[in-house]
Figure 1: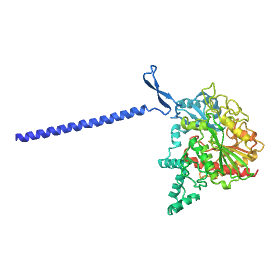
Figure 2 (figure 1 turned 180 degrees about the vertical axis):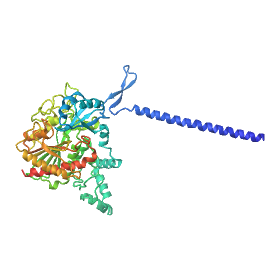
Figure 3 (figure 1 turned 180 degrees about the horizontal axis):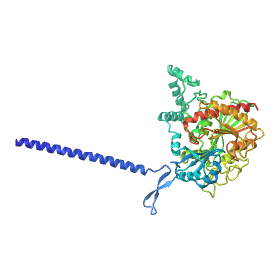
Length: 538
Protein backbone atom coordinates (compact mmCIF):
# COMPACT_ATOMS: atom_id res chain seq x y z
CA UNK A 1 0.00 0.00 0.00
CA UNK A 2 2.84 2.37 0.85
CA UNK A 3 4.52 1.55 -2.45
CA UNK A 4 1.33 2.35 -4.34
CA UNK A 5 1.03 5.69 -2.53
CA UNK A 6 4.58 6.57 -3.43
CA UNK A 7 3.90 5.68 -7.06
CA UNK A 8 0.83 7.95 -7.16
CA UNK A 9 2.70 10.84 -5.57
CA UNK A 10 5.53 10.52 -8.08
CA UNK A 11 3.06 10.46 -10.94
CA UNK A 12 1.27 13.48 -9.49
CA UNK A 13 4.47 15.45 -9.23
CA UNK A 14 5.31 14.63 -12.83
CA UNK A 15 1.90 15.82 -13.99
CA UNK A 16 2.23 18.97 -11.93
CA UNK A 17 5.62 19.78 -13.44
CA UNK A 18 4.23 19.09 -16.91
CA UNK A 19 1.40 21.55 -16.31
CA UNK A 20 3.87 24.16 -15.04
CA UNK A 21 6.06 23.61 -18.09
CA UNK A 22 3.13 24.02 -20.47
CA UNK A 23 1.97 27.20 -18.73
CA UNK A 24 5.46 28.72 -18.83
CA UNK A 25 5.85 27.75 -22.48
CA UNK A 26 2.51 29.34 -23.31
CA UNK A 27 3.43 32.61 -21.58
CA UNK A 28 6.84 32.60 -23.24
CA UNK A 29 5.36 32.17 -26.70
CA UNK A 30 2.73 34.81 -26.00
CA UNK A 31 5.39 37.24 -24.86
CA UNK A 32 7.44 36.56 -28.00
CA UNK A 33 4.41 37.28 -30.17
CA UNK A 34 3.70 40.47 -28.25
CA UNK A 35 7.35 41.54 -28.44
CA UNK A 36 7.41 40.75 -32.15
CA UNK A 37 4.26 42.77 -32.72
CA UNK A 38 5.75 45.63 -30.73
CA UNK A 39 8.90 45.49 -32.82
CA UNK A 40 6.88 45.40 -36.03
CA UNK A 41 4.73 48.24 -34.79
CA UNK A 42 7.86 50.14 -33.86
CA UNK A 43 9.31 49.54 -37.31
CA UNK A 44 6.15 50.69 -39.01
CA UNK A 45 6.11 53.87 -37.01
CA UNK A 46 9.70 54.72 -37.91
CA UNK A 47 9.87 53.69 -41.55
CA UNK A 48 12.11 56.15 -43.37
CA UNK A 49 10.07 57.82 -46.13
CA UNK A 50 11.41 57.60 -49.68
CA UNK A 51 12.07 61.35 -49.77
CA UNK A 52 14.60 61.05 -46.89
CA UNK A 53 18.08 59.56 -47.24
CA UNK A 54 20.40 58.61 -44.35
CA UNK A 55 23.99 59.72 -44.98
CA UNK A 56 27.15 59.21 -42.96
CA UNK A 57 29.48 62.12 -42.33
CA UNK A 58 32.65 62.57 -40.33
CA UNK A 59 32.30 64.13 -36.91
CA UNK A 60 33.98 67.43 -36.06
CA UNK A 61 37.00 65.71 -34.52
CA UNK A 62 37.25 63.28 -37.43
CA UNK A 63 37.39 60.28 -35.11
CA UNK A 64 33.96 58.88 -35.87
CA UNK A 65 31.10 58.99 -38.33
CA UNK A 66 27.68 60.39 -37.62
CA UNK A 67 24.46 59.58 -39.43
CA UNK A 68 21.93 62.22 -40.34
CA UNK A 69 18.75 62.42 -42.40
CA UNK A 70 18.84 64.45 -45.60
CA UNK A 71 15.78 65.51 -47.58
CA UNK A 72 16.46 64.42 -51.15
CA UNK A 73 13.18 65.73 -52.54
CA UNK A 74 9.88 67.15 -51.41
CA UNK A 75 7.54 64.99 -49.41
CA UNK A 76 4.63 63.57 -51.36
CA UNK A 77 1.48 65.66 -51.11
CA UNK A 78 -1.57 63.82 -49.81
CA UNK A 79 -5.24 64.78 -49.94
CA UNK A 80 -6.68 62.81 -47.05
CA UNK A 81 -10.20 63.98 -46.29
CA UNK A 82 -10.19 66.59 -49.07
CA UNK A 83 -13.37 66.87 -51.11
CA UNK A 84 -14.46 68.01 -54.55
CA UNK A 85 -17.48 70.32 -54.42
CA UNK A 86 -19.73 71.38 -57.27
CA UNK A 87 -21.25 74.81 -56.71
CA UNK A 88 -24.39 75.05 -58.80
CA UNK A 89 -26.05 78.51 -58.58
CA UNK A 90 -25.40 80.95 -61.39
CA UNK A 91 -24.04 83.46 -58.89
CA UNK A 92 -21.77 80.92 -57.26
CA UNK A 93 -18.80 81.67 -59.48
CA UNK A 94 -18.28 85.32 -58.50
CA UNK A 95 -18.89 84.39 -54.86
CA UNK A 96 -16.11 81.84 -55.01
CA UNK A 97 -13.70 84.06 -56.89
CA UNK A 98 -14.08 86.95 -54.47
CA UNK A 99 -14.62 85.07 -51.23
CA UNK A 100 -13.44 81.49 -51.06
CA UNK A 101 -10.56 80.94 -53.46
CA UNK A 102 -8.80 84.14 -52.42
CA UNK A 103 -9.34 83.61 -48.69
CA UNK A 104 -8.32 80.00 -48.20
CA UNK A 105 -5.18 78.28 -49.46
CA UNK A 106 -6.89 74.96 -48.81
CA UNK A 107 -9.20 75.37 -51.82
CA UNK A 108 -8.42 75.01 -55.50
CA UNK A 109 -10.30 75.65 -58.73
CA UNK A 110 -10.78 72.58 -60.93
CA UNK A 111 -13.28 73.53 -63.61
CA UNK A 112 -16.34 75.65 -64.19
CA UNK A 113 -18.44 77.90 -66.37
CA UNK A 114 -21.30 80.35 -65.92
CA UNK A 115 -23.57 77.79 -64.26
CA UNK A 116 -21.35 75.52 -62.14
CA UNK A 117 -17.92 75.48 -60.61
CA UNK A 118 -15.87 72.59 -59.22
CA UNK A 119 -13.53 73.35 -56.33
CA UNK A 120 -11.27 71.13 -54.26
CA UNK A 121 -11.55 71.83 -50.52
CA UNK A 122 -8.94 70.61 -48.06
CA UNK A 123 -10.19 68.78 -44.98
CA UNK A 124 -9.26 71.56 -42.55
CA UNK A 125 -11.13 74.16 -44.61
CA UNK A 126 -14.39 72.26 -45.05
CA UNK A 127 -16.20 73.81 -42.03
CA UNK A 128 -15.10 77.37 -42.85
CA UNK A 129 -15.84 77.20 -46.58
CA UNK A 130 -19.18 75.54 -45.92
CA UNK A 131 -20.11 78.29 -43.47
CA UNK A 132 -19.25 81.04 -45.98
CA UNK A 133 -21.35 79.40 -48.69
CA UNK A 134 -24.30 79.03 -46.34
CA UNK A 135 -24.04 82.69 -45.32
CA UNK A 136 -24.19 83.68 -48.99
CA UNK A 137 -27.03 81.23 -49.74
CA UNK A 138 -24.87 79.29 -52.18
CA UNK A 139 -25.64 75.58 -52.48
CA UNK A 140 -23.11 72.90 -53.35
CA UNK A 141 -22.91 69.14 -53.88
CA UNK A 142 -20.06 66.89 -52.75
CA UNK A 143 -18.82 65.11 -55.87
CA UNK A 144 -15.81 63.30 -54.36
CA UNK A 145 -16.06 62.61 -50.65
CA UNK A 146 -12.43 61.57 -50.08
CA UNK A 147 -10.03 62.78 -52.74
CA UNK A 148 -7.05 60.75 -51.55
CA UNK A 149 -9.09 57.56 -51.75
CA UNK A 150 -10.07 58.45 -55.32
CA UNK A 151 -6.40 59.06 -56.16
CA UNK A 152 -5.37 55.73 -54.64
CA UNK A 153 -8.00 53.88 -56.69
CA UNK A 154 -7.39 55.77 -59.95
CA UNK A 155 -4.37 53.84 -61.23
CA UNK A 156 -4.25 50.45 -59.45
CA UNK A 157 -1.00 48.48 -59.67
CA UNK A 158 -0.74 46.00 -62.50
CA UNK A 159 -0.99 42.30 -61.80
CA UNK A 160 2.23 40.29 -61.47
CA UNK A 161 1.33 38.42 -64.64
CA UNK A 162 0.95 41.63 -66.64
CA UNK A 163 4.09 43.16 -65.14
CA UNK A 164 6.06 40.07 -66.15
CA UNK A 165 4.57 40.30 -69.63
CA UNK A 166 5.45 43.99 -70.04
CA UNK A 167 8.95 43.66 -68.59
CA UNK A 168 9.66 40.73 -70.88
CA UNK A 169 8.45 42.68 -73.88
CA UNK A 170 10.53 45.70 -72.93
CA UNK A 171 13.73 43.77 -72.19
CA UNK A 172 13.77 41.48 -75.24
CA UNK A 173 11.10 42.15 -77.81
CA UNK A 174 12.33 39.51 -80.26
CA UNK A 175 11.99 36.72 -77.72
CA UNK A 176 8.70 38.09 -76.35
CA UNK A 177 7.17 38.40 -79.81
CA UNK A 178 8.16 34.89 -80.82
CA UNK A 179 6.94 33.34 -77.57
CA UNK A 180 3.71 35.33 -77.72
CA UNK A 181 2.97 34.09 -81.22
CA UNK A 182 3.87 30.54 -80.28
CA UNK A 183 1.54 30.74 -77.30
CA UNK A 184 -1.52 32.27 -78.91
CA UNK A 185 -1.58 30.96 -82.45
CA UNK A 186 -2.77 27.37 -82.65
CA UNK A 187 -1.65 27.12 -86.26
CA UNK A 188 1.93 27.85 -85.28
CA UNK A 189 1.80 25.58 -82.25
CA UNK A 190 0.99 22.54 -84.40
CA UNK A 191 3.86 22.99 -86.82
CA UNK A 192 7.59 22.70 -86.69
CA UNK A 193 9.84 25.23 -85.03
CA UNK A 194 11.17 26.23 -88.45
CA UNK A 195 7.69 27.09 -89.74
CA UNK A 196 6.94 28.97 -86.54
CA UNK A 197 10.02 31.13 -86.95
CA UNK A 198 9.29 31.66 -90.64
CA UNK A 199 5.73 32.76 -89.85
CA UNK A 200 7.02 35.19 -87.27
CA UNK A 201 9.67 36.46 -89.71
CA UNK A 202 6.98 37.21 -92.28
CA UNK A 203 4.98 39.12 -89.67
CA UNK A 204 1.87 36.98 -89.99
CA UNK A 205 -0.99 38.43 -87.98
CA UNK A 206 -2.05 36.07 -85.22
CA UNK A 207 -5.59 34.73 -85.23
CA UNK A 208 -6.15 35.10 -81.49
CA UNK A 209 -5.52 38.47 -79.88
CA UNK A 210 -2.96 38.86 -77.15
CA UNK A 211 -4.48 39.37 -73.73
CA UNK A 212 -2.36 42.46 -73.14
CA UNK A 213 -2.44 44.09 -76.55
CA UNK A 214 -5.79 45.36 -77.86
CA UNK A 215 -4.94 44.90 -81.53
CA UNK A 216 -2.13 42.54 -82.61
CA UNK A 217 -0.13 43.75 -85.56
CA UNK A 218 2.61 42.23 -87.72
CA UNK A 219 6.20 43.03 -86.84
CA UNK A 220 7.27 44.27 -90.23
CA UNK A 221 10.95 44.96 -89.52
CA UNK A 222 12.02 42.20 -87.13
CA UNK A 223 15.78 42.18 -87.66
CA UNK A 224 17.08 44.80 -90.09
CA UNK A 225 15.81 47.72 -88.04
CA UNK A 226 15.92 46.21 -84.57
CA UNK A 227 16.51 48.36 -81.53
CA UNK A 228 19.66 46.57 -80.37
CA UNK A 229 20.77 46.14 -76.79
CA UNK A 230 24.53 46.32 -76.35
CA UNK A 231 26.06 42.85 -76.69
CA UNK A 232 22.72 41.18 -77.21
CA UNK A 233 23.03 40.51 -80.92
CA UNK A 234 20.16 40.30 -83.38
CA UNK A 235 18.16 38.04 -81.06
CA UNK A 236 17.99 40.64 -78.29
CA UNK A 237 16.49 44.07 -78.80
CA UNK A 238 14.31 46.30 -76.68
CA UNK A 239 10.56 46.61 -76.85
CA UNK A 240 8.22 48.80 -74.81
CA UNK A 241 5.85 48.70 -71.83
CA UNK A 242 2.92 50.67 -73.24
CA UNK A 243 -0.62 49.41 -72.90
CA UNK A 244 -3.90 51.18 -72.21
CA UNK A 245 -5.22 49.66 -69.01
CA UNK A 246 -3.14 51.96 -66.80
CA UNK A 247 -1.50 55.38 -66.77
CA UNK A 248 2.19 55.28 -67.63
CA UNK A 249 5.22 57.26 -66.52
CA UNK A 250 7.18 59.41 -68.95
CA UNK A 251 9.89 56.78 -69.53
CA UNK A 252 7.30 54.31 -70.78
CA UNK A 253 5.81 56.87 -73.16
CA UNK A 254 9.20 57.92 -74.53
CA UNK A 255 10.31 54.29 -74.76
CA UNK A 256 7.23 53.58 -76.85
CA UNK A 257 7.98 56.46 -79.24
CA UNK A 258 11.59 55.31 -79.65
CA UNK A 259 10.44 51.76 -80.26
CA UNK A 260 8.08 52.86 -83.03
CA UNK A 261 10.78 54.92 -84.71
CA UNK A 262 13.22 52.00 -84.62
CA UNK A 263 10.70 49.37 -85.68
CA UNK A 264 8.82 51.33 -88.36
CA UNK A 265 11.44 53.74 -89.75
CA UNK A 266 9.63 54.27 -93.04
CA UNK A 267 6.57 55.56 -91.15
CA UNK A 268 7.74 56.96 -87.82
CA UNK A 269 10.50 59.31 -86.77
CA UNK A 270 11.17 60.97 -83.41
CA UNK A 271 12.26 64.59 -83.18
CA UNK A 272 13.58 66.22 -80.05
CA UNK A 273 12.29 69.78 -80.47
CA UNK A 274 13.79 71.11 -77.24
CA UNK A 275 14.12 70.51 -73.53
CA UNK A 276 11.92 71.27 -70.55
CA UNK A 277 12.78 73.54 -67.64
CA UNK A 278 14.39 70.59 -65.84
CA UNK A 279 16.14 69.32 -68.96
CA UNK A 280 13.80 66.57 -70.12
CA UNK A 281 13.46 66.18 -73.90
CA UNK A 282 10.30 67.22 -75.72
CA UNK A 283 9.72 64.35 -78.15
CA UNK A 284 7.53 64.75 -81.22
CA UNK A 285 6.61 61.66 -83.23
CA UNK A 286 6.08 62.18 -86.96
CA UNK A 287 3.83 59.61 -88.63
CA UNK A 288 3.79 59.67 -92.43
CA UNK A 289 3.67 57.11 -95.22
CA UNK A 290 5.44 59.48 -97.59
CA UNK A 291 2.52 60.56 -99.76
CA UNK A 292 3.03 63.96 -101.35
CA UNK A 293 0.63 66.87 -101.12
CA UNK A 294 -1.18 65.69 -98.00
CA UNK A 295 -2.18 67.99 -95.11
CA UNK A 296 -0.37 67.98 -91.78
CA UNK A 297 -2.02 67.82 -88.37
CA UNK A 298 -0.50 68.74 -85.01
CA UNK A 299 -1.71 66.81 -81.96
CA UNK A 300 -0.52 67.36 -78.41
CA UNK A 301 -1.41 66.37 -74.86
CA UNK A 302 -0.19 66.75 -71.32
CA UNK A 303 -0.01 70.55 -71.26
CA UNK A 304 -1.45 70.50 -67.75
CA UNK A 305 0.36 67.92 -65.67
CA UNK A 306 -2.56 66.48 -63.71
CA UNK A 307 -4.64 65.66 -66.81
CA UNK A 308 -3.40 62.08 -67.14
CA UNK A 309 -6.08 61.00 -69.59
CA UNK A 310 -4.65 63.38 -72.19
CA UNK A 311 -1.26 61.64 -72.85
CA UNK A 312 -2.98 58.26 -72.54
CA UNK A 313 -5.49 59.16 -75.26
CA UNK A 314 -2.79 60.67 -77.49
CA UNK A 315 -0.61 57.53 -77.30
CA UNK A 316 -3.67 55.44 -78.15
CA UNK A 317 -4.16 57.61 -81.25
CA UNK A 318 -0.51 57.01 -82.13
CA UNK A 319 -1.02 53.26 -81.84
CA UNK A 320 -3.96 53.36 -84.23
CA UNK A 321 -2.26 55.60 -86.79
CA UNK A 322 0.88 53.46 -86.92
CA UNK A 323 -1.14 50.28 -87.26
CA UNK A 324 -3.10 51.78 -90.16
CA UNK A 325 -0.25 53.76 -91.68
CA UNK A 326 -0.67 52.28 -95.16
CA UNK A 327 -4.03 54.02 -95.57
CA UNK A 328 -3.04 57.39 -94.09
CA UNK A 329 -3.78 60.47 -96.18
CA UNK A 330 -2.20 63.01 -93.84
CA UNK A 331 1.01 63.58 -91.91
CA UNK A 332 0.78 63.72 -88.13
CA UNK A 333 3.13 65.50 -85.75
CA UNK A 334 2.35 64.36 -82.22
CA UNK A 335 3.74 65.65 -78.91
CA UNK A 336 2.21 63.36 -76.25
CA UNK A 337 3.54 65.30 -73.25
CA UNK A 338 3.99 69.07 -73.57
CA UNK A 339 4.85 69.34 -69.88
CA UNK A 340 7.16 66.41 -69.01
CA UNK A 341 8.45 67.90 -65.74
CA UNK A 342 5.01 68.53 -64.36
CA UNK A 343 3.74 65.17 -65.58
CA UNK A 344 6.49 63.29 -63.74
CA UNK A 345 5.92 65.46 -60.66
CA UNK A 346 2.31 64.25 -60.48
CA UNK A 347 3.59 60.68 -60.09
CA UNK A 348 6.33 61.40 -57.57
CA UNK A 349 5.13 64.35 -55.49
CA UNK A 350 1.71 65.89 -56.10
CA UNK A 351 -0.97 64.14 -58.12
CA UNK A 352 -2.87 67.40 -58.70
CA UNK A 353 0.03 69.58 -59.87
CA UNK A 354 -0.94 71.65 -62.93
CA UNK A 355 1.93 73.87 -64.10
CA UNK A 356 5.45 73.21 -65.32
CA UNK A 357 8.33 73.10 -62.80
CA UNK A 358 10.17 76.33 -63.60
CA UNK A 359 11.58 78.10 -60.52
CA UNK A 360 11.34 81.88 -60.50
CA UNK A 361 13.82 83.99 -58.56
CA UNK A 362 12.26 85.83 -55.67
CA UNK A 363 9.30 83.48 -55.38
CA UNK A 364 8.74 80.45 -53.21
CA UNK A 365 6.25 79.08 -55.73
CA UNK A 366 7.22 77.12 -58.82
CA UNK A 367 5.63 76.71 -62.19
CA UNK A 368 3.89 78.48 -65.06
CA UNK A 369 0.59 77.55 -66.67
CA UNK A 370 1.84 76.68 -70.14
CA UNK A 371 -1.59 77.24 -71.65
CA UNK A 372 -1.39 80.89 -70.61
CA UNK A 373 2.15 81.38 -71.96
CA UNK A 374 1.64 81.44 -75.74
CA UNK A 375 2.19 84.66 -77.61
CA UNK A 376 -1.26 85.83 -78.60
CA UNK A 377 -3.08 88.20 -76.23
CA UNK A 378 -0.67 87.07 -73.52
CA UNK A 379 -1.46 88.33 -70.02
CA UNK A 380 -5.13 89.07 -70.70
CA UNK A 381 -8.30 87.78 -69.12
CA UNK A 382 -8.13 84.53 -67.18
CA UNK A 383 -4.43 84.84 -66.33
CA UNK A 384 -2.43 85.91 -63.29
CA UNK A 385 0.88 87.66 -62.59
CA UNK A 386 1.14 85.89 -59.23
CA UNK A 387 3.70 83.02 -59.42
CA UNK A 388 1.72 81.12 -56.78
CA UNK A 389 -1.43 81.09 -58.90
CA UNK A 390 -2.39 78.02 -60.92
CA UNK A 391 -2.97 80.32 -63.92
CA UNK A 392 0.34 82.21 -63.66
CA UNK A 393 1.15 83.28 -67.22
CA UNK A 394 4.92 83.58 -66.76
CA UNK A 395 7.20 86.59 -67.02
CA UNK A 396 6.53 87.08 -70.75
CA UNK A 397 5.02 85.33 -73.74
CA UNK A 398 7.01 82.19 -74.56
CA UNK A 399 9.09 82.65 -71.42
CA UNK A 400 9.00 78.89 -70.83
CA UNK A 401 11.27 76.46 -72.67
CA UNK A 402 8.35 74.15 -73.44
CA UNK A 403 6.21 76.76 -75.22
CA UNK A 404 9.25 78.32 -76.86
CA UNK A 405 10.25 74.93 -78.28
CA UNK A 406 6.81 74.53 -79.87
CA UNK A 407 7.04 78.00 -81.40
CA UNK A 408 10.52 77.27 -82.80
CA UNK A 409 9.31 73.99 -84.25
CA UNK A 410 6.51 75.62 -86.21
CA UNK A 411 8.73 78.46 -87.40
CA UNK A 412 11.22 75.94 -88.79
CA UNK A 413 8.72 73.44 -90.20
CA UNK A 414 7.82 73.35 -93.88
CA UNK A 415 4.76 71.15 -93.32
CA UNK A 416 1.37 72.37 -94.49
CA UNK A 417 -0.49 72.37 -91.17
CA UNK A 418 -4.27 72.41 -91.47
CA UNK A 419 -5.21 71.42 -87.91
CA UNK A 420 -3.96 72.06 -84.39
CA UNK A 421 -5.54 69.75 -81.80
CA UNK A 422 -4.63 70.04 -78.13
CA UNK A 423 -6.15 67.49 -75.73
CA UNK A 424 -7.00 68.41 -72.14
CA UNK A 425 -9.44 67.34 -69.42
CA UNK A 426 -12.02 67.48 -68.06
CA UNK A 427 -15.66 68.39 -68.83
CA UNK A 428 -16.26 66.96 -72.33
CA UNK A 429 -15.96 70.13 -74.40
CA UNK A 430 -14.99 70.67 -78.04
CA UNK A 431 -13.74 74.26 -78.08
CA UNK A 432 -12.61 76.65 -80.79
CA UNK A 433 -11.15 80.20 -80.53
CA UNK A 434 -11.20 82.69 -79.16
CA UNK A 435 -10.31 82.04 -75.56
CA UNK A 436 -8.98 85.50 -74.75
CA UNK A 437 -12.49 87.02 -75.03
CA UNK A 438 -15.98 86.08 -76.17
CA UNK A 439 -15.57 87.07 -79.78
CA UNK A 440 -15.23 84.46 -82.53
CA UNK A 441 -13.01 84.21 -85.65
CA UNK A 442 -14.42 85.15 -89.06
CA UNK A 443 -14.67 81.46 -90.06
CA UNK A 444 -16.30 80.37 -86.81
CA UNK A 445 -19.18 78.77 -88.74
CA UNK A 446 -16.75 76.28 -90.30
CA UNK A 447 -15.12 75.63 -86.94
CA UNK A 448 -18.48 75.07 -85.31
CA UNK A 449 -19.75 72.77 -88.06
CA UNK A 450 -16.67 70.53 -88.06
CA UNK A 451 -16.62 70.58 -84.26
CA UNK A 452 -20.20 69.34 -84.12
CA UNK A 453 -19.43 66.61 -86.65
CA UNK A 454 -16.54 65.53 -84.46
CA UNK A 455 -18.72 65.57 -81.34
CA UNK A 456 -21.27 63.32 -83.07
CA UNK A 457 -18.53 60.88 -84.05
CA UNK A 458 -17.20 60.89 -80.49
CA UNK A 459 -20.64 60.03 -79.16
CA UNK A 460 -20.84 57.03 -81.50
CA UNK A 461 -17.32 55.84 -80.70
CA UNK A 462 -18.24 54.12 -77.45
CA UNK A 463 -21.30 52.43 -75.99
CA UNK A 464 -21.38 55.03 -73.23
CA UNK A 465 -22.36 57.62 -75.87
CA UNK A 466 -20.59 60.54 -74.18
CA UNK A 467 -21.87 63.97 -75.15
CA UNK A 468 -19.42 66.78 -75.93
CA UNK A 469 -20.44 70.43 -75.82
CA UNK A 470 -19.22 72.45 -78.82
CA UNK A 471 -18.57 76.18 -78.77
CA UNK A 472 -16.29 79.15 -78.37
CA UNK A 473 -13.76 78.65 -75.54
CA UNK A 474 -14.48 81.84 -73.62
CA UNK A 475 -18.25 81.55 -73.85
CA UNK A 476 -18.62 77.81 -73.35
CA UNK A 477 -16.04 77.36 -70.60
CA UNK A 478 -14.16 80.45 -69.37
CA UNK A 479 -11.90 83.23 -70.64
CA UNK A 480 -8.22 82.34 -70.81
CA UNK A 481 -5.73 84.43 -72.77
CA UNK A 482 -2.41 83.10 -74.02
CA UNK A 483 -3.75 79.69 -75.03
CA UNK A 484 -2.11 77.53 -77.66
CA UNK A 485 -5.24 77.21 -79.81
CA UNK A 486 -5.66 81.01 -80.05
CA UNK A 487 -1.99 81.34 -81.02
CA UNK A 488 -2.24 78.59 -83.64
CA UNK A 489 -5.31 80.22 -85.18
CA UNK A 490 -4.19 83.86 -85.09
CA UNK A 491 -0.43 83.63 -85.66
CA UNK A 492 0.10 80.34 -87.49
CA UNK A 493 -3.12 80.76 -89.52
CA UNK A 494 -4.05 77.11 -88.98
CA UNK A 495 -7.64 76.57 -90.11
CA UNK A 496 -8.90 73.98 -87.64
CA UNK A 497 -7.63 74.88 -84.20
CA UNK A 498 -9.36 73.16 -81.29
CA UNK A 499 -9.01 72.47 -77.59
CA UNK A 500 -10.66 69.17 -76.70
CA UNK A 501 -11.54 68.62 -73.05
CA UNK A 502 -11.90 64.86 -72.58
CA UNK A 503 -13.88 62.90 -69.99
CA UNK A 504 -15.51 63.11 -67.65
CA UNK A 505 -18.29 65.48 -66.65
CA UNK A 506 -17.40 65.51 -63.01
CA UNK A 507 -17.80 62.28 -61.05
CA UNK A 508 -14.02 61.84 -61.12
CA UNK A 509 -12.62 65.05 -62.59
CA UNK A 510 -8.85 64.88 -63.00
CA UNK A 511 -8.61 61.50 -61.25
CA UNK A 512 -10.40 59.53 -63.95
CA UNK A 513 -9.92 55.79 -63.23
CA UNK A 514 -7.71 53.90 -65.65
CA UNK A 515 -10.60 51.70 -66.76
CA UNK A 516 -11.91 54.69 -68.74
CA UNK A 517 -8.73 55.14 -70.79
CA UNK A 518 -9.76 53.06 -73.80
CA UNK A 519 -13.35 54.38 -74.07
CA UNK A 520 -12.10 57.96 -73.78
CA UNK A 521 -9.26 57.37 -76.24
CA UNK A 522 -11.70 55.94 -78.78
CA UNK A 523 -13.63 59.21 -78.60
CA UNK A 524 -10.45 61.22 -79.10
CA UNK A 525 -9.51 59.06 -82.09
CA UNK A 526 -12.95 59.60 -83.65
CA UNK A 527 -12.41 63.36 -83.41
CA UNK A 528 -9.01 63.10 -85.11
CA UNK A 529 -10.53 61.10 -87.95
CA UNK A 530 -13.25 63.70 -88.56
CA UNK A 531 -10.75 66.57 -88.50
CA UNK A 532 -8.46 64.68 -90.88
CA UNK A 533 -11.28 64.30 -93.41
CA UNK A 534 -12.04 68.02 -93.12
CA UNK A 535 -8.38 68.89 -93.72
CA UNK A 536 -8.28 66.79 -96.89
CA UNK A 537 -10.97 69.03 -98.40
CA UNK A 538 -9.00 72.25 -97.94
